[in-house]
Amino acid sequence: MSRKSLVDESVRDALIEERKTERRVLVKELSTLGGMIRGSLLHTKRKCGQKGCRCSTAGELHEVCLLSTSVTGRRNRMTYVRPTEESRFRTAVESYSRAWEIIERLTELNIADIKEGK
Ligand SMILES: [Zn+2]
Image 1 (cartoon, helix red, strand yellow):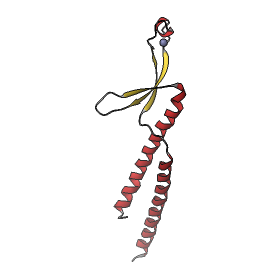
Image 2: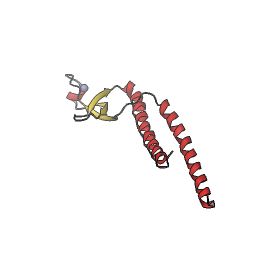
Image 3: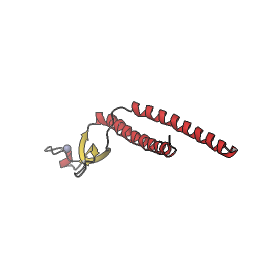
Image 4: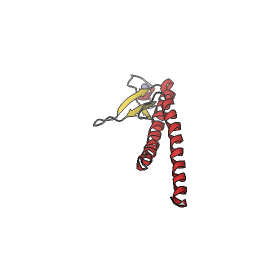
């Protein structure tokens, strides 16, 4: 074996080791992500429908937070989010987003491994 290919091989081994470590860290983080929710939070203004409410009399609409979740072949599903629930919903939506990022990165690492016959 030539000197050059020995160097290439050690570089390759180092890269494989790096991917292994990165994968371990990512899988561990993935396992710590708690409740996940696929969707997004949005704030909008609405009328509540109650007679005599300032939203109908004075046109002062109520601010509401909604969770919008896409459903295949249908209109997005909307879930009303109470102010007291908002931070938990936000954490769950962010966890889903982070899980997605992790899976994207794992995909790259796994492709590289298979391509190198590992
Ligand atoms: Zn109202």
